[in-house]
Amino acid sequence: MNIRPRVIAGFIIKEFIQILRDRKMIGAIFFIPVIQLVMFGFALTSEVKNITLVMVSPPSKMARDIEARALASGWFSRVDINGAQIADPAELLTSQKAEAALVAPKEGFEYAFEHLDKPAQLLINAINAQRAQQVDGYIKQIVLQTARAQSPQFDAGRVGWRSRSKMAP
Image (cartoon, rainbow, N blue to C red; front, side, top):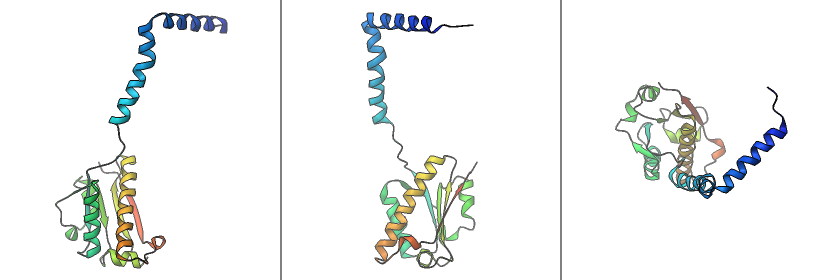
């Protein structure tokens, strides 16, 4: 089938004339999409909330401070699990009891931030990759703020830290 450009141009011109004749059609084509943009602009947000976080750490001041800051941010919610007694934090993500687990070495978060040989780990359920990236950013900011508050000479460039995303079923 051979369609000539002149035929297409004539069809487009005819349709524009028809649209401009009917005032209701002008409203439907131009004003309704503007209203939708305004409504969806206020209704939709990419902010992540209600993240279930488990702190897998021996009891320490820094662990309590990180958890307190996380809960105070409004992004995280508490999970009623004793993090100091968890053998396999990845199992929490797989069983969907938690969305993120912040795991300290046996020596605690203080040791992880002073020594690079035993880093802290952040395990995140990455079924939703965009949500996982935001969770990663939120937690890293909270941990770095807590570390700076406890030690003014804290060097953020020397943090022992690993993030791992896990695709839970």
